[in-house]
Amino acid sequence: MQDFKSFNFTKMKTIWRYFTDFHKEVKHPPGLYISISIFIAILTAFNYLIMDIRFEKWMDRLKPDSLPYLAHFIMFSIIFYGIVFLCYRFKTIPNLFNDKAFMAKSLFMLLVLTVDVCFQYYKDITRELFEYQDRFYMYKVSSQVTSIFVMMLPILIYYLKFEKSNDNFYGLRTSVRKIGQYFPLILLMIPLIAGASFEESFRSFYPRFSSTYEFMGWSVELRAVVFEIFYAWDFVTTEFLFRGFMVLAFTAFLGPRAILPMVGLYVALHYGKPLGETIGSFFGGYILGVLTYQSKNIWGGIVVHMGIALLMELAAWMQKVFN
Image 1 (tube, one colour):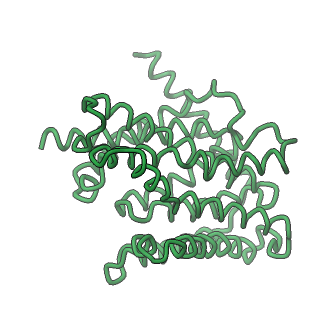
Image 2: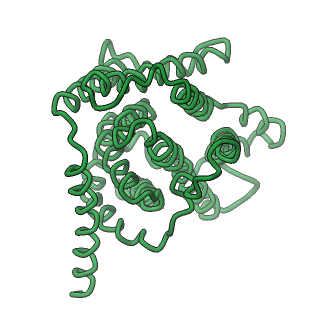
């Protein structure tokens, strides 16, 4: 027991040092933090609260099918370039809007993000290949792996063509031996997740796995295990895009301020989920961004993200069982 406490204390000291070193090195003007927080809060309130409009869901239902892509691209662009503009106005970065390399790279990133969020054609493929009773389960599973093709593959091609000299590959190639230092963060989240699991909005959204979806005669246990494996995989691609590409790939232009527009986009990614989770993504995105920037490693974020997501699944499942 003493060894366990010593292990956790040592690991927390390492994580705390990442934060203290970062904020000693980087002096964000308080006004910049406040302005970005207000900007994100207004967008979030518009999505969740104003006249009970769920703007994200409205965009998803636009017709023809190309309009959701355009609407999301515009929303993501407003968030990203809005925060970059605020950083410029507070004199923490140069004027990058005249930098062709920055604009080209950021437009590529926003396009990849848009396609990753809006891509739905896997449903057409599923309808062609599977019987009706098997489709709903395959919709859920296949939606977790499309990011490999619509997000990771384009970024890999970009990397090989333009940034192959950087052998870090946006935090994926770094050592995974130090990921144990992030486990205390998961432990700290357990009471928060347990408390959130009593909220109606949480129980209506989680667990993401549903035992009512049949698939080829598989047992419910097998369906659950396969689903959760693919569900966990989705957080590898999420960390790769948001912490790996958006932070590490843009450090050359934005320096440590690359974390700030990433946080705005990460909050937007959670629109449509329970409001408490969306608010939490603001702080979680910033924390994981700092850890990635300091360690140049996204594996810690992957472990934390997976751990929290699976704990949320477990908490929701326990609520259904015992209630």
